Length: 174
Image: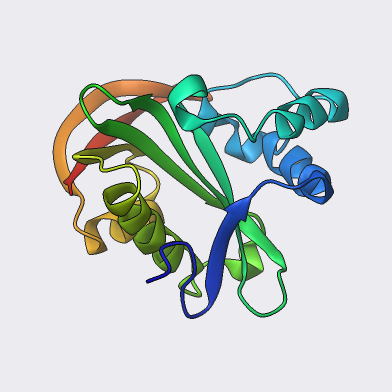
């Protein structure tokens, strides 16, 4: 049974040729709130990151995989595990689809399903969690559809201009 390949997409390790996609995603100011960053990344820093992406999740406590088309290999987006905690068998999870044209086509759902299975089979995790802004209804629907349960709310957690956005905490027991 393949855990990283589905019907339409597969998840794979970062490759040097992904640099421009990763650079574009990391420097898209509309996405900065997802990673709580406020500064751009240089091509050099992205290259260094990709050069070190082969390091073991048990060492660096994170894993970033590329979502790509199973037939053409076309880059679609990224899916991440972060705050990996091998003692308590949990990790945070995040996903981004690069272009608006690729959103809403089921790629995110299949990628999340694959990663859930990978986490259960290979990492033997007990749970995953995700923090999602209340203004991100697409992600809320995606995570709820795949069995994530809302377990809390962080009030006024993220600033957006002059307003503050609540953030929902979701958990999935594998």
